[in-house]
Every structure is written in structure tokens, then in C-alpha cells.
Length: 83
Image 1 (cartoon, rainbow, N blue to C red):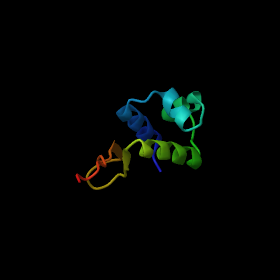
Image 2: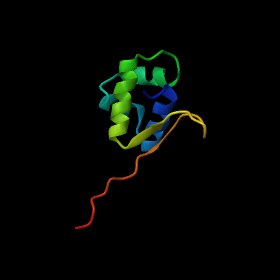
Image 3: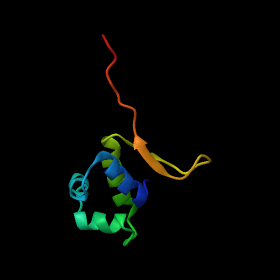
Image 4: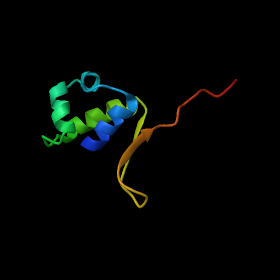
């Protein structure tokens, strides 16, 4: 499940506005703003919904580990193999 910071970073990576992401996740843009700004404690279902939308757009969420903290990156592109 992504953190609010990862959601903000993923949205930026994809070049999505808050309004665009909120619309795709079927939520209010003001709610997304408060979530990203740390003004509210988000529900797990909200984070999961946002995560699904961003993953569908090609974002990978990275968990904290020995090499560093949590993060985001683009998934490798899935191009078709040549015939």
C-alpha cells in the first residue's frame, strides 16, 4: 500500500494534476490534496484505490529497504516481441 508521499511522487512522475488523479480514482480533488499534504489520516481503501490507478499507469511503489527509503519509479515498458 503506497504512502501519501509516494502517491504525490507518483502523480508528479506521471505528470498528472490532482484533479486528474482524483477523477481517475473516483474521489474529490480536495480530499486528495489534504491526503498528500498530510492533513488527514487516509483510509487503507483510499490508499489502495489510488495505488491501483497509479500502478495501472505504470508506476512501481518501492518499499524501504537496505538501499534506501520508500520511493516510486516507472515500470519497465511492456513492448510486444518482434514477429
